[in-house]
Length: 415
Image (tube, rainbow, N blue to C red):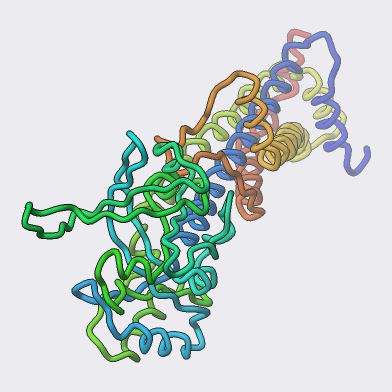
């Protein structure tokens, strides 16, 4: 007998076209089940990875890696702090900012929003706001021009466009003989940006730093200084280092502290989804058990004949392990290919479905991100493939063991 006849017979059983087509159908269903489970797990983890990447990129584009603020919200020595920060080898850039709240009015439309005073040149080095501009430029925020750049959702709410003048009203008033009158100032819309996160696109506008100092009566002071660091995951340690070098009592913060709940919830969701979908793969893999049990019953006579011509129990074991392994390998490979294709083309598929059915999968006013991103990671694919193959191999052990223990005389008694 051939040295590798076990593998040949096991593979032949998978492709068998005998009268018992039901067994072959069950084998095909087992392959399909594993393929679907593997592809769905790859797709879901890719979407979660995409959300994590997009959330990180978009948050960092608006919030910077770290910030240092004065305790009372008015920092007068910000230039010295900026110099200390830039001198640090792990800081790429520093930019002053002023944060405030205001009521924006245009005609009969009004909306509360945050206004951030920035130095356009310095801000462009710290964050990615400049790259999110849809109309106009961030450089249009010149000192004394009293221009404002709005998010697209905020502009839509106010029904304004480039060149329109928006009235900015502050809660702090001016005391006059007639009473307290709110302070107001008219700003010209000079640009529109879109980050893709409703939180920013709807609730934040940018003005020049000098204009913000006049508007909020800060004189030469600012709210604080924003930093861009070389290693974003070391932002917490770097901002503390800069603050200690500066030597003043200040408040320090970084992107991981401000938005830690977002990333923690994503990691928890990813872990839960991985476990749930892993159970789906386990169910699909253990279908191999029922398939092989049926094959063993169907091939009792073949097993007995092989034993009588000299096949050892180990050879019978190898035959059915081979059959189950082929089912698992083919199903896993098909699932990996299909899952990768879906993950790489997900955004195109989603856009096509939205256009075809006139629906929106992620509403901008409900979710932080209005797009459905996907990021395929080789490590995830490798882990999923390994687990699927291991479960498939484990599923073959019991039926193959039963086949190996088949007694030739018992199997041939009624044939």
